[in-house]
Length: 107
Length: 248
Image (cartoon, rainbow over all chains, first blue to last red; front, side, top):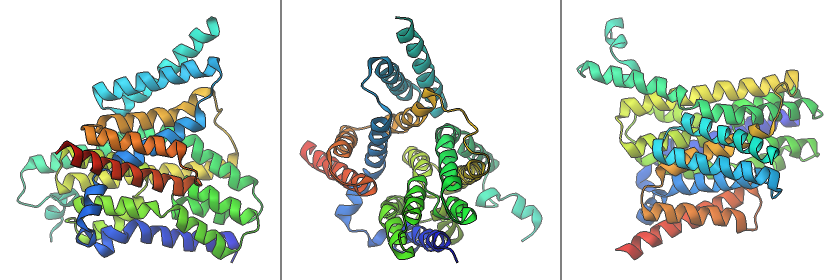
Protein backbone atom coordinates (compact mmCIF):
# COMPACT_ATOMS: atom_id res chain seq x y z
CA UNK A 1 0.00 0.00 0.00
CA UNK A 2 1.39 3.41 -0.94
CA UNK A 3 1.90 6.08 1.73
CA UNK A 4 -0.63 8.35 0.00
CA UNK A 5 -3.27 5.62 0.00
CA UNK A 6 -2.71 4.96 3.72
CA UNK A 7 -2.98 8.69 4.50
CA UNK A 8 -6.12 9.07 2.42
CA UNK A 9 -7.82 6.02 4.00
CA UNK A 10 -6.86 6.84 7.59
CA UNK A 11 -7.30 10.60 7.15
CA UNK A 12 -10.69 10.01 5.48
CA UNK A 13 -11.86 7.80 8.35
CA UNK A 14 -10.61 10.31 10.93
CA UNK A 15 -12.30 13.17 9.06
CA UNK A 16 -15.63 11.32 9.05
CA UNK A 17 -15.27 10.65 12.79
CA UNK A 18 -14.65 14.35 13.41
CA UNK A 19 -17.67 15.30 11.28
CA UNK A 20 -19.82 12.65 12.99
CA UNK A 21 -18.55 13.33 16.52
CA UNK A 22 -21.57 15.28 17.78
CA UNK A 23 -24.09 14.41 15.07
CA UNK A 24 -23.81 10.65 15.64
CA UNK A 25 -21.89 9.81 18.80
CA UNK A 26 -22.01 12.51 21.45
CA UNK A 27 -25.24 14.39 20.74
CA UNK A 28 -26.05 18.01 21.58
CA UNK A 29 -26.84 17.17 25.21
CA UNK A 30 -23.14 16.51 25.85
CA UNK A 31 -22.31 20.10 24.92
CA UNK A 32 -22.16 22.31 28.04
CA UNK A 33 -24.58 25.26 28.09
CA UNK A 34 -21.85 27.98 27.73
CA UNK A 35 -20.40 26.15 24.70
CA UNK A 36 -23.90 25.85 23.23
CA UNK A 37 -24.31 29.63 23.50
CA UNK A 38 -20.97 30.07 21.74
CA UNK A 39 -21.95 27.64 18.98
CA UNK A 40 -24.91 29.85 18.11
CA UNK A 41 -22.25 32.11 16.56
CA UNK A 42 -20.33 29.31 14.83
CA UNK A 43 -21.80 29.88 11.38
CA UNK A 44 -21.13 33.65 11.05
CA UNK A 45 -17.68 33.40 12.64
CA UNK A 46 -16.38 30.52 10.53
CA UNK A 47 -17.80 32.01 7.35
CA UNK A 48 -16.42 35.49 8.15
CA UNK A 49 -12.97 34.01 8.86
CA UNK A 50 -13.03 32.02 5.60
CA UNK A 51 -14.24 35.14 3.74
CA UNK A 52 -11.37 37.23 5.08
CA UNK A 53 -8.91 34.48 4.22
CA UNK A 54 -10.19 34.15 0.65
CA UNK A 55 -10.16 37.94 0.18
CA UNK A 56 -6.63 38.27 1.66
CA UNK A 57 -5.41 35.59 -0.75
CA UNK A 58 -6.76 37.49 -3.77
CA UNK A 59 -6.64 41.20 -3.01
CA UNK A 60 -3.82 43.17 -4.56
CA UNK A 61 -2.69 46.63 -3.46
CA UNK A 62 -1.94 47.54 -7.06
CA UNK A 63 -4.47 50.24 -8.08
CA UNK A 64 -5.48 48.59 -11.35
CA UNK A 65 -6.53 45.42 -9.52
CA UNK A 66 -7.63 46.86 -6.18
CA UNK A 67 -10.43 49.00 -7.66
CA UNK A 68 -12.18 46.12 -9.52
CA UNK A 69 -11.74 43.81 -6.53
CA UNK A 70 -13.16 46.39 -4.10
CA UNK A 71 -16.04 47.08 -6.52
CA UNK A 72 -16.81 43.36 -6.81
CA UNK A 73 -16.90 42.89 -3.03
CA UNK A 74 -18.91 46.07 -2.37
CA UNK A 75 -21.51 45.29 -5.03
CA UNK A 76 -21.71 41.66 -3.90
CA UNK A 77 -22.28 42.77 -0.29
CA UNK A 78 -25.03 45.17 -1.37
CA UNK A 79 -26.80 42.59 -3.54
CA UNK A 80 -26.45 39.88 -0.86
CA UNK A 81 -27.94 42.24 1.72
CA UNK A 82 -30.84 43.25 -0.54
CA UNK A 83 -31.66 39.85 -2.11
CA UNK A 84 -30.02 37.19 0.08
CA UNK A 85 -29.53 35.14 -3.10
CA UNK A 86 -26.14 33.65 -3.91
CA UNK A 87 -26.65 33.46 -7.69
CA UNK A 88 -27.56 37.16 -7.98
CA UNK A 89 -24.68 38.05 -5.68
CA UNK A 90 -22.23 36.13 -7.85
CA UNK A 91 -23.52 37.63 -11.10
CA UNK A 92 -23.51 41.18 -9.72
CA UNK A 93 -20.10 40.84 -8.06
CA UNK A 94 -18.34 39.40 -11.09
CA UNK A 95 -20.20 41.85 -13.35
CA UNK A 96 -18.95 44.75 -11.19
CA UNK A 97 -15.45 43.31 -11.33
CA UNK A 98 -15.54 43.17 -15.14
CA UNK A 99 -17.03 46.66 -15.45
CA UNK A 100 -14.54 48.21 -13.02
CA UNK A 101 -11.65 46.41 -14.73
CA UNK A 102 -12.72 47.87 -18.06
CA UNK A 103 -13.16 51.34 -16.53
CA UNK A 104 -9.77 51.29 -14.81
CA UNK A 105 -8.15 49.98 -17.99
CA UNK A 106 -9.75 52.80 -19.97
CA UNK A 107 -8.51 55.54 -17.60
CA UNK B 1 -44.50 -1.15 3.26
CA UNK B 2 -45.95 -0.91 -0.24
CA UNK B 3 -44.33 0.92 -3.13
CA UNK B 4 -47.27 3.31 -3.10
CA UNK B 5 -46.56 4.25 0.49
CA UNK B 6 -42.86 4.63 -0.27
CA UNK B 7 -43.57 6.89 -3.23
CA UNK B 8 -45.70 9.06 -0.95
CA UNK B 9 -42.71 9.56 1.37
CA UNK B 10 -40.04 11.40 -0.57
CA UNK B 11 -37.19 11.85 1.88
CA UNK B 12 -39.52 10.73 4.66
CA UNK B 13 -42.73 12.84 4.61
CA UNK B 14 -45.18 10.97 6.84
CA UNK B 15 -47.91 9.13 4.86
CA UNK B 16 -50.61 11.14 6.63
CA UNK B 17 -48.89 14.46 5.84
CA UNK B 18 -50.70 16.85 3.48
CA UNK B 19 -49.54 16.95 -0.18
CA UNK B 20 -47.86 20.30 0.53
CA UNK B 21 -45.25 18.45 2.59
CA UNK B 22 -44.05 16.41 -0.42
CA UNK B 23 -44.21 19.50 -2.63
CA UNK B 24 -42.12 21.56 -0.22
CA UNK B 25 -39.63 18.73 0.19
CA UNK B 26 -39.23 18.49 -3.60
CA UNK B 27 -38.77 22.26 -3.81
CA UNK B 28 -36.04 22.18 -1.17
CA UNK B 29 -34.40 19.17 -2.86
CA UNK B 30 -34.11 21.18 -6.09
CA UNK B 31 -32.99 24.28 -4.16
CA UNK B 32 -30.18 22.23 -2.60
CA UNK B 33 -28.65 21.80 -6.05
CA UNK B 34 -29.42 25.25 -7.50
CA UNK B 35 -28.23 27.14 -4.43
CA UNK B 36 -25.02 25.12 -4.42
CA UNK B 37 -24.19 26.19 -8.00
CA UNK B 38 -22.44 29.49 -7.09
CA UNK B 39 -20.18 27.59 -4.69
CA UNK B 40 -19.48 24.99 -7.36
CA UNK B 41 -18.55 27.72 -9.84
CA UNK B 42 -16.16 29.19 -7.26
CA UNK B 43 -14.65 25.88 -6.21
CA UNK B 44 -14.34 24.25 -9.64
CA UNK B 45 -11.00 25.94 -10.48
CA UNK B 46 -9.70 25.02 -7.01
CA UNK B 47 -10.68 21.36 -7.50
CA UNK B 48 -9.03 21.42 -10.92
CA UNK B 49 -5.87 22.83 -9.32
CA UNK B 50 -5.90 20.04 -6.72
CA UNK B 51 -6.17 17.54 -9.60
CA UNK B 52 -3.29 19.17 -11.45
CA UNK B 53 -1.19 19.05 -8.26
CA UNK B 54 -1.94 15.32 -7.92
CA UNK B 55 -1.03 14.77 -11.58
CA UNK B 56 2.28 16.57 -11.23
CA UNK B 57 3.25 15.03 -7.85
CA UNK B 58 5.34 11.87 -7.76
CA UNK B 59 3.57 8.70 -6.62
CA UNK B 60 0.18 7.05 -6.68
CA UNK B 61 -2.26 9.18 -8.72
CA UNK B 62 -5.26 6.98 -7.99
CA UNK B 63 -4.61 7.29 -4.24
CA UNK B 64 -4.15 11.03 -4.74
CA UNK B 65 -7.52 11.29 -6.51
CA UNK B 66 -9.16 9.14 -3.80
CA UNK B 67 -8.36 11.97 -1.39
CA UNK B 68 -11.14 13.89 -3.21
CA UNK B 69 -14.02 11.64 -2.13
CA UNK B 70 -12.41 10.42 1.11
CA UNK B 71 -10.89 13.56 2.65
CA UNK B 72 -13.47 15.75 0.84
CA UNK B 73 -11.67 18.97 1.67
CA UNK B 74 -9.37 20.83 -0.70
CA UNK B 75 -6.98 22.45 1.75
CA UNK B 76 -6.53 19.22 3.73
CA UNK B 77 -6.08 17.27 0.51
CA UNK B 78 -3.28 19.60 -0.65
CA UNK B 79 -1.71 19.42 2.81
CA UNK B 80 -1.65 15.60 2.70
CA UNK B 81 -0.32 15.63 -0.85
CA UNK B 82 2.52 18.04 -0.11
CA UNK B 83 3.42 16.21 3.13
CA UNK B 84 3.64 12.83 1.37
CA UNK B 85 5.46 14.31 -1.64
CA UNK B 86 7.92 15.91 0.79
CA UNK B 87 8.71 12.52 2.32
CA UNK B 88 6.56 12.63 5.47
CA UNK B 89 5.64 9.26 7.02
CA UNK B 90 2.03 8.01 6.86
CA UNK B 91 1.41 8.79 10.53
CA UNK B 92 2.84 12.34 10.33
CA UNK B 93 0.73 13.11 7.25
CA UNK B 94 -2.37 11.57 8.87
CA UNK B 95 -1.85 13.63 12.03
CA UNK B 96 -1.61 16.77 9.87
CA UNK B 97 -4.91 15.84 8.21
CA UNK B 98 -6.59 15.30 11.59
CA UNK B 99 -5.25 18.60 12.96
CA UNK B 100 -6.35 20.51 9.85
CA UNK B 101 -9.82 18.94 9.94
CA UNK B 102 -10.41 19.33 13.67
CA UNK B 103 -12.68 22.31 12.96
CA UNK B 104 -15.15 19.81 11.46
CA UNK B 105 -15.96 18.67 15.00
CA UNK B 106 -17.11 22.23 15.72
CA UNK B 107 -19.39 22.20 12.66
CA UNK B 108 -20.76 18.87 13.89
CA UNK B 109 -21.41 20.35 17.34
CA UNK B 110 -23.03 23.45 15.85
CA UNK B 111 -25.46 21.44 13.71
CA UNK B 112 -26.14 18.69 16.25
CA UNK B 113 -28.85 20.65 18.04
CA UNK B 114 -30.95 21.16 14.92
CA UNK B 115 -30.14 17.85 13.19
CA UNK B 116 -30.32 15.78 16.38
CA UNK B 117 -34.01 14.84 15.92
CA UNK B 118 -33.32 13.45 12.40
CA UNK B 119 -33.52 9.67 11.76
CA UNK B 120 -30.45 7.59 12.50
CA UNK B 121 -29.68 6.82 8.83
CA UNK B 122 -29.50 10.54 8.07
CA UNK B 123 -27.25 11.29 11.06
CA UNK B 124 -24.83 8.63 9.79
CA UNK B 125 -24.93 9.83 6.16
CA UNK B 126 -24.88 13.57 6.82
CA UNK B 127 -21.36 13.87 8.29
CA UNK B 128 -19.77 12.78 5.04
CA UNK B 129 -21.12 15.90 3.32
CA UNK B 130 -20.26 18.28 6.17
CA UNK B 131 -18.00 20.77 4.39
CA UNK B 132 -18.04 24.58 4.46
CA UNK B 133 -20.45 25.22 1.55
CA UNK B 134 -22.98 22.65 2.82
CA UNK B 135 -22.62 23.99 6.38
CA UNK B 136 -23.15 27.55 5.13
CA UNK B 137 -26.26 26.79 3.06
CA UNK B 138 -27.87 24.40 5.54
CA UNK B 139 -27.13 26.80 8.41
CA UNK B 140 -28.97 29.61 6.58
CA UNK B 141 -32.04 27.44 6.02
CA UNK B 142 -32.04 26.18 9.61
CA UNK B 143 -31.99 29.78 10.84
CA UNK B 144 -34.99 30.58 8.63
CA UNK B 145 -36.84 27.60 10.10
CA UNK B 146 -37.71 24.59 7.90
CA UNK B 147 -39.19 21.18 8.63
CA UNK B 148 -37.09 18.05 9.33
CA UNK B 149 -38.07 16.56 5.98
CA UNK B 150 -37.21 19.73 4.07
CA UNK B 151 -33.78 20.19 5.60
CA UNK B 152 -32.98 16.51 5.06
CA UNK B 153 -33.77 16.78 1.34
CA UNK B 154 -31.90 20.06 1.04
CA UNK B 155 -28.83 18.81 2.89
CA UNK B 156 -28.55 15.62 0.85
CA UNK B 157 -29.02 17.15 -2.60
CA UNK B 158 -26.63 20.02 -1.80
CA UNK B 159 -24.08 17.55 -0.43
CA UNK B 160 -24.33 15.16 -3.37
CA UNK B 161 -24.03 18.05 -5.86
CA UNK B 162 -20.93 19.22 -4.03
CA UNK B 163 -19.38 15.74 -3.79
CA UNK B 164 -19.99 14.81 -7.44
CA UNK B 165 -18.68 18.11 -8.80
CA UNK B 166 -15.70 18.20 -6.45
CA UNK B 167 -14.47 14.66 -7.13
CA UNK B 168 -15.24 14.97 -10.85
CA UNK B 169 -13.28 18.22 -11.18
CA UNK B 170 -10.30 16.75 -9.33
CA UNK B 171 -10.37 13.76 -11.69
CA UNK B 172 -10.51 16.14 -14.65
CA UNK B 173 -7.54 18.03 -13.27
CA UNK B 174 -5.54 14.82 -12.83
CA UNK B 175 -6.29 13.66 -16.39
CA UNK B 176 -6.38 16.82 -18.44
CA UNK B 177 -4.43 19.44 -16.53
CA UNK B 178 -5.59 23.04 -16.36
CA UNK B 179 -8.32 22.89 -19.01
CA UNK B 180 -10.13 25.97 -17.74
CA UNK B 181 -8.37 29.24 -18.49
CA UNK B 182 -7.80 31.12 -15.25
CA UNK B 183 -8.65 34.76 -15.77
CA UNK B 184 -8.44 37.35 -12.99
CA UNK B 185 -12.21 37.23 -12.52
CA UNK B 186 -12.12 33.53 -11.62
CA UNK B 187 -9.99 34.36 -8.58
CA UNK B 188 -12.73 36.66 -7.29
CA UNK B 189 -15.52 34.07 -7.55
CA UNK B 190 -14.87 32.47 -4.17
CA UNK B 191 -14.55 35.76 -2.20
CA UNK B 192 -17.75 37.04 -3.84
CA UNK B 193 -19.60 33.80 -3.03
CA UNK B 194 -18.37 34.02 0.56
CA UNK B 195 -19.66 37.61 0.80
CA UNK B 196 -23.00 36.26 -0.41
CA UNK B 197 -22.93 33.60 2.33
CA UNK B 198 -21.97 35.88 5.20
CA UNK B 199 -23.97 39.07 4.63
CA UNK B 200 -27.51 37.55 4.78
CA UNK B 201 -26.86 35.90 8.17
CA UNK B 202 -25.62 39.09 9.88
CA UNK B 203 -29.02 39.66 11.45
CA UNK B 204 -28.24 41.03 14.92
CA UNK B 205 -25.61 43.26 16.47
CA UNK B 206 -24.01 40.37 18.41
CA UNK B 207 -23.77 38.32 15.22
CA UNK B 208 -22.11 41.26 13.46
CA UNK B 209 -19.65 41.66 16.37
CA UNK B 210 -18.79 37.93 16.28
CA UNK B 211 -18.21 37.98 12.51
CA UNK B 212 -16.08 41.15 12.60
CA UNK B 213 -13.91 39.83 15.45
CA UNK B 214 -13.43 36.49 13.65
CA UNK B 215 -12.49 38.28 10.42
CA UNK B 216 -10.00 40.61 12.11
CA UNK B 217 -8.52 37.71 14.10
CA UNK B 218 -8.08 35.76 10.87
CA UNK B 219 -5.81 38.57 9.66
CA UNK B 220 -3.90 39.09 12.89
CA UNK B 221 -3.55 35.74 14.68
CA UNK B 222 -0.06 34.37 14.03
CA UNK B 223 -0.89 30.67 13.49
CA UNK B 224 -0.82 28.30 10.51
CA UNK B 225 -3.94 27.98 8.26
CA UNK B 226 -6.34 25.52 9.90
CA UNK B 227 -5.48 26.42 13.49
CA UNK B 228 -5.77 30.14 12.66
CA UNK B 229 -9.29 29.46 11.40
CA UNK B 230 -10.24 27.71 14.64
CA UNK B 231 -8.67 30.40 16.86
CA UNK B 232 -10.35 33.18 14.84
CA UNK B 233 -13.75 31.46 15.00
CA UNK B 234 -13.51 30.78 18.75
CA UNK B 235 -12.53 34.42 19.40
CA UNK B 236 -15.49 35.51 17.27
CA UNK B 237 -17.86 33.23 19.17
CA UNK B 238 -16.59 34.55 22.53
CA UNK B 239 -17.06 38.12 21.27
CA UNK B 240 -20.62 37.28 20.20
CA UNK B 241 -21.49 35.90 23.66
CA UNK B 242 -19.79 38.88 25.37
CA UNK B 243 -21.70 41.35 23.21
CA UNK B 244 -24.96 39.53 24.01
CA UNK B 245 -24.25 39.86 27.74
CA UNK B 246 -23.30 43.53 27.48
CA UNK B 247 -26.59 44.36 25.74
CA UNK B 248 -28.66 42.79 28.56
